[in-house]
Image 1 (spheres, one colour):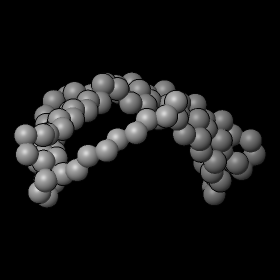
Image 2: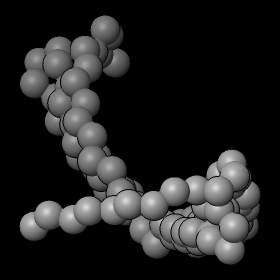
Image 3: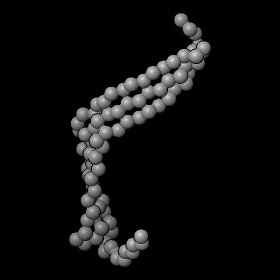
Image 4: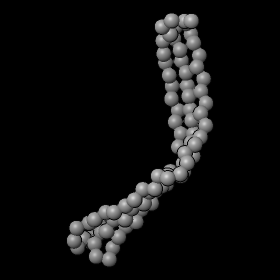
Length: 89
């Protein structure tokens, strides 16, 4: 698929925007660690819900503007771990 655009901007482009970071972020976390001799291995994961959002407006010329909005509904991470036991008590 090909697309073409021709046009121009009359005057400088300007951008304004705001971010609404109010709200609650919460979630759950789970993980497991195991030891083999002096080495410790682990895995951990979490998932969170979020109400964060942002919006912005860019003026692209006379009578022309572009509005964008983004929202983070949820996010999560997974991480591994490797460690060493210095003193086994």
